[in-house]
Structures are given as C-alpha cells and as structure tokens.
Amino acid sequence: MTATAPTLDVGLVRAQFPILSTTAHGRPLVYLDSAATTQKPQSVIDRVTRYYERENANIHRGVYALSADATAMHDASRARIARFINAASEREVIFTRGTTESVNLVAQAWGHATLRTGDEIVVTAMEHHSNIVPWQLVAAQRGAVVRAAPVNEAGELDLEGFQRLLTKRTKMVAVVHLSNALGTINPVKRVAELAHAAGALVLVDGAQSVAHLPVDVQDLGCDFFAFSGHKLFGPTGIGVLWGREALLDRMPPWQGGGDMIGTVAVEGSTWAPLPAKFEAGTPHIAGAVGLHTAIDFLAGLDQAAVAAHEHDLLSHATERVGSIPGVRLIGTAREKASVLSFTVEGVHPHDLGTVLDADGICIRAGHHCAQPLMRRFGLVATARASFSLYNTRDDVDALAAGVEKAKGLLA
Amino acid sequence: MSSVSELYQSVILDHNRTPRNYGRLEGDARHARGYNPLCGDECTVWLKVEGDTLADVKFEGQGCAISKASASLMTMAVKGKPVAEAAALAERFHDLVTGKLNEAESQALPARLQVFGNVAQFPVRVKCASMPWHTLKAALAGGDAPELVELK
Image (cartoon, rainbow over all chains, first blue to last red; front, side, top):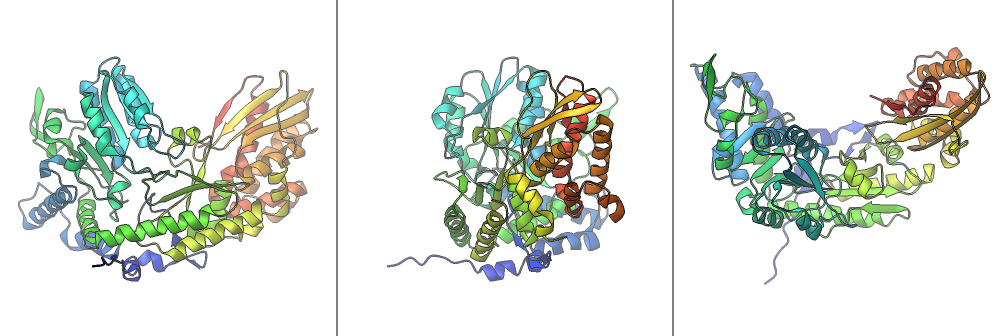
C-alpha cells in the first residue's frame, strides 16, 4: 500500500488572495514577508466589510438586536479561537491588540503582582524584542532580573545552557515557538517540562507558529500562549492571550475601564469574571470577527498538504539561495519552518532589499527586532525571506535570481 | 520609482567597495557616533580641526552601500574646507536627498555629491545617505566628547 502525499492546489489558494495578482513597480508582486504580516484572503476582507456595512454595533451594551448580534459574533470568534488552540475553556481566551500586548499583559498583570527582588525571568537569545522588553520593564519595577538562554551556531536553543539558568529564583520562562528571524522551531513542550520542574511558569510567543504549526496549548503544557491575528491571515490590531484559567483568575486586572468591572463605586470597584476582566474598553470587534473567518480559512485547508507545501518551499529556497556563492544562511536548525535568513558577501541586506523591490520582490532586511540574536551571530542585519502557503517555487526562483542580480551590481 | 541603476551609480558602487578616508583619527580628535535604530547601521566620524579648517576627517562604520558611499564622499567633500562651509554643505546635502533642491541648486553642489539626488526617489533609503552628514554635524558641534546621534 502506498500513501499518496497530499498536495495543495496553490493556484486555487492564490486566487483567494487579491493582492497576489497586483503588481509592484510594474512587476508581478512576489511577497516573501509573511513573517511580518500575511496577506488576507477575500473571505476575511469580505467578512470585515460586511461587518461594517451591515452588522456594526457596540457589544455588551444595546438592548437592540444589532448589538446583541454583534455580541454574539464576538463571542463566536472567541469560541472558534478556543477550539483552534484547544483551550480548555473560552474564558481562557483574552482578546488583545496582538502578541506584543499579550506579553505586556502577562508581564504587568502577573509580573507586577508576583515578582520580588532577585526573582528571575528567563528568555532566550532568539526572542523578538516584544518578548524581552516587557520583561525588562517589569523587572525594573520589581527588582527582578532578565536572563537569556544561549543559542547554538545552528540557531537552536541550547537546552543544557537553558537548564543551567533554571534555579529556584526563576519565576517565568518566556520562549518563542517559531523564531521570526531564523525559522527555528523550539521544543517548547520540553522547555515547559523543565521550567515547571524548576517551579517557573511558561509563556510561549506563538506569533509565527500559529500560521505554520498545529497548536494545542494543553499539549504544549505552557501557561500562557500569545499570538496575533495579522500573521494568521486576519486583520491587524487583533490578537490573543491564552492563559490557564486558574492563573488568569488570580491575576489582577491590567487596564481599567468599561466592560472589565463588576460594580464601580468611587471608594472602590470589583472586577468582571474572565475573560472580561482583561478586556477594558470597546474591543476590536471587526478584528475578532475577521480573525474568526481567517481561522476558518486556514482550518478549511488540508493541513498535511499545507505543511508539505511549506516544507517544499523552504527546502527549495535553502537549496537555490543557499547554493549561491557568498550566501551564508543564518539559522540552520534541524527543526525549522517558513523563514530563510541570510547574508550575501559584499551586499548589505538593505541594498539587496532595494534591488529586489525594484523587481517586485518583497523581503525584510534588518535586525528583525531581534538585536541580541544578531549580536550572537556577529551581525547587524540579515536579509529574510519568509514563506506562506500562497507562495510558489517560482517566487523562490525569483528571489534567487534577484540575489544573483544584486551580487552582480554590488559585490 | 526610478530604476535601481540610477540609485547605484558607479561612483556610489566604487566608494562602497573602496571607501576613502576610512579609519579613525588618533589622539584627541573630535568624534561622534551616528546610529540608525531602525536598521542597526552605525557610523563614527572623526575630525581634526585646525583654526577654522577641517584639517582631517575619517569615518568608520557598518552600513549599506548608500551610507558607506555617502560617508566616503562626504569626507572627500569637506576635508580641508572651512568648518562653516562644511556645516553649510551638510544642510544642502540634506535638502538634496530629501528632494528639496531644484536642478540648478543641485548642480551647484560638488559633482560627486549630485549622484545622491536620486536617493530622494527612494524614501526608505534617505536616512542611509543622510546619517553620515548628521554625524558630521554632531561632531562639529560636540567638542571632544562623543555624542550619540539617534536618528528617528
């Protein structure tokens, strides 16, 4: 019996993304910056438009049907997200502006109430600034210390080095699931086991992983999981913090305002139950509704076919770009997805970015908000191509041709 | 947008590959460091002022072809010039790369600086060209102490 490898009909997928048939500088758009933000399928664009055209009202307020319906849509999105990440309860799904706000929420609400002088927060040397700086802020407020677990030459987390940092002072381990700068997939389940054995909590930055890896927060064993809608084919300005209900229940509110209260008196107030306790003010309702549709879009595809396609893109890119003389790949982890970070001898990443842009090819050039990681590799910047399910081998070939062109011009 | 060949003219490519006046001045030379936090590029400019004259200028740094060539050509343009003239040229250069000069005004600039006029067509690259000049101004203003120029 032979198993047939599932295949993704990329043409059919691409047809759902209107921006992919536009041009840049007169050339067909080759979008290789999905780690920064993914493009949006027509279904998400239409859903957000329909919401504003026909369904807009504030939630939790009106006694009229329009408001009640908007509330129901907002709730339905939360339920869809809970199912998508296998949360034990919808009460564990908090809407935020994005991954950054989710991390800040935990750093402030949990950290400010919990951390004491000398306590330690362990991050890794491959974190995005948004999983470093919020911890530095609360560490400075509470007299705590931020430490970074080392990364090896391949761009993998050094698990032994990480374990050496775990002590009874460690109160939080904050780790990225899939590195935006390298594509490294971290063994977060193992990290969570080790951290819990040391008595620490675990926050996973899932900004990149949700669009590329199956996420089951209960199986991962973490305590908090943060992600953004806009890297998951959804709108910008909407994101999620998932947290264990018992922990969220014990945490004080972070921001105060409408919707997060029980009763308010000038002498003092009480808080709403989860998830409202952490959702002060009118939320991004259209964003939540759009994210629901974005998750439906992704979940509607054959996951094995998507994974196989993305794996093929990365291997093809590694081969095509990696074999160009003068190219150094940054990040060669055994477990890797969706990102090709590299330097070209004699060609600064920004110049490469400009040359590629002239041919309609969008890549990211810079430090990828991961300066400690760049320092680890003795670099200031890299060029980064990142792939999504709508990319093709032709996109990769265009990138390789562009790198050769830039070399010819500049090196 | 103009074509990339208009941006990367041969004089820019030449100074990127072989920057002039690259290195540092020893002793108590004035210097300032420029840094672009958006991309991480950096540039340090050293000055030796004798009387009212910029007797020597050198630079060091990590950056793209545009910033390296801009720094290299800047040192050539201001070396040996009166301090006031160098400061005025820095202002004119900024006007050039932000597209504020007309053709006649551009042509009044030293010939080798005029190639940077095309940078105005590439808005995201303007800071690459202007950073060395901002750093020069800081060094001119800053006495002996290093001064960090954080560009926004």
